[in-house]
Length: 425
RNA sequence: GUGCCUGUAGCUCAAUAGGUUAGAGCGCUACACUGUGGAUGUAGAUGUUGUGGGUUCAAGUCCCAUCAGGCACCCCA
Image (cartoon, rainbow, N blue to C red):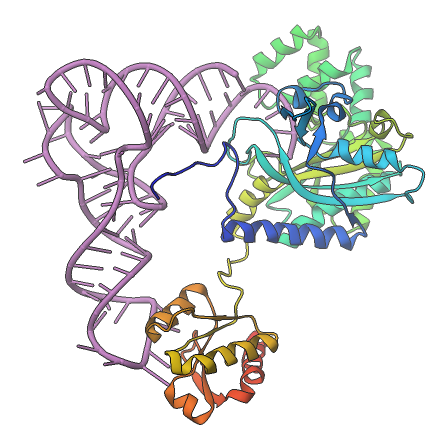
């Protein structure tokens, strides 16, 4: 307590309570991924800078990656995202991997950014991707997985929504307005919510757009039915209906996503109140694997960081209560004479499949019970001189204060029955 | 990387226009006597007021720097 060495900026300690939350997210991600047949994989945490530079030296790499020299002088990067590693892995075994490839992963990423709510420098991210299919069914499946995840953690369509757009559709519409350059136009769209109308017009004019084009663009972005003009989107939404998750989705013309490699479908999940930043983001990337030196294998996927989803789940109180101790029983003990009996009881319970703690010191019973209560342990096993003399043990249910006395030989069976009865009701 | 706001016991916050030994609630520990908990009561501990400088007779309170957190930008999970 004297010297307090702080954590690295933007890095978090995971105390048991936070670890439990992280594991809860992981468990849901795993369940949903496997429900759709996806295989778990991982890439290295350390990569060469080259891997990301190959993707056209974006800001993500130049300014937001942790880069350092190893002892050989090589530039090493703490991975800021997983998709390039995935593309590399797939490209390297393109000839032998059966397609389609359905993979998912959950692991740490690092970005050298200014920490804010929902954003830190070290975070965990769920990545799920389907590669080797161009079909709109693949896009819809990935999107449906996002929705199924929300359903799994108890978030309803009234609380979160996945917004969809299609870059191919937007590109056609933008071209129809006579705007030659697509990229600046997408940037402009991305900022519609962030800039005031006059500022937005000014920004657009600076990009070389005429007032007519700006007006046309504005009308475009207000048109919530624009998706009907896209055959891909029409089918996309139909498939989501068939998959039973349509109510989680809405068409949103202003969603275009920042990453350059998205080509068609793009998606972004948000809380309905708009209180937090995006929960997940993703889309289809047709050329990324080829850019990594492999065959042209297109893919679609999304990434979900652990922080925003945690904030949203906590806001709606969907995070399960934290079980302090995994133990179902606490074995108390009174002193040296009773030690063997208590140790034996603890062992019998553990052998019987019941997670069991034994208090490490023969302190007052009051203190041992208080501890069991504070840790949320359901049962206390009491073996004092009276019980020991008769070969018995007392089992106390903390919640009801009820207690029964049983033969030590029957302890594990009796305890198991007590636990089952209670969970059965 | 840019701008702004914040930083007091484990937690949430107090501390009159800078003035003597920095307080409260919750929590925590001990006791209420020796085999029964979450209630109550009593007692108690804890802070070099984020850190380092400076101004002043005197600073938690003013100034500068620095670190951390928050908000906007940027970017994005």
